Length: 176
Image (cartoon, rainbow, N blue to C red; front, side, top):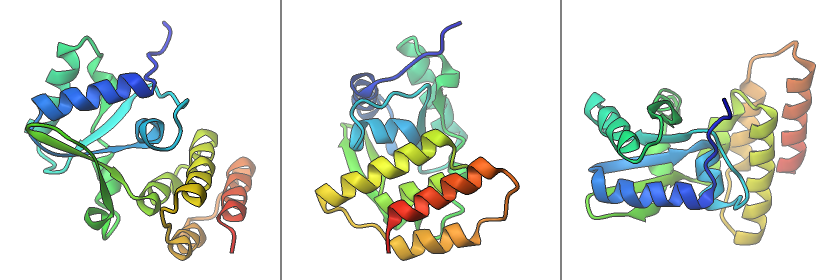
């Protein structure tokens, strides 16, 4: 079976629908956020959309929304709230992305986006991080580079040589 792919247009259409049919505040992260924010050709297999209330009702509403537009419910992921809530000031790091009639969707700040990518830092994550850093250079959006470097330094050591390399490449991309 060919994996489902979401491009910028499809993600934006879902966000508009979410703004009309969901309620409350939501946060879009991961590859879907990258696609609608700074990487227009980026595609993703899932949409990480998190209800900021952290409730089961929000998760179920998101699944109902996906099912109503023939998106497999496993393609909408709200479990990343576990990682968001481990970042102390995450709530202050949200940027308005879309305001609908009944729901507001945010994206992470550049700093929060990078903090969320550091733990796993897959090859795709590194590509997203580098693309975001380049975007911020041209757009003027600020990044707390010292905070990102400190978090990189605090990551547990790894025997995975490719992960070590990706961490080094991100550090280089951050500059001094």
